[in-house]
Length: 225
Image: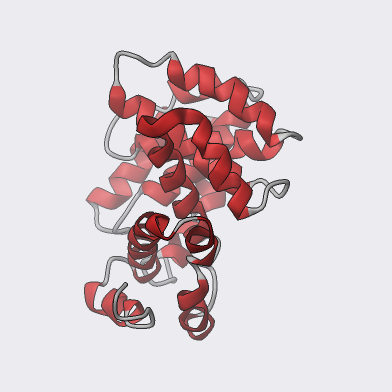
């Protein structure tokens, strides 16, 4: 808690939440993350529950269905889903086998469109985090979900793309901000919308939801963005 609120504090808390998940349950850990937010000790709980999701997948011996089902309920739970999906993707040697396996699982969610969107979004996290695929190939891989659902996969890619820069010191981050969305622009300039939106979310995470500070960082982008 000596760290300022924002990404550095949340990643510092990561080992605590992973251990809590392994020693108790994802439900208990998600509840604890929610409590920290309610107490205003952290301004956001999404990243915290990413750590919970990663640990929960390991706890369930990489049974992705069981891990997701036990991510509990409440405002923080979808970070748990995203973290589990991301970890699952990184564990697979061939990312294309992930798509065929998890696509059918996401497709089977027909009673809850929000849950299905988050399932597909989580695959985006995993595809981008996987070293086997280039960012451009990961974007193309999302097309397997079709016109309706592919945007949620690309949104997950864009979020994971931004997350990889959030541990940088601020001077370095400012320098690289104009380059962060290049992989998306090189595939299709229309995808910049996803990347810029997720950059805004990421910068809010970085600053602990300090609006003015986030706006200053946004000024490093070209004016049209």
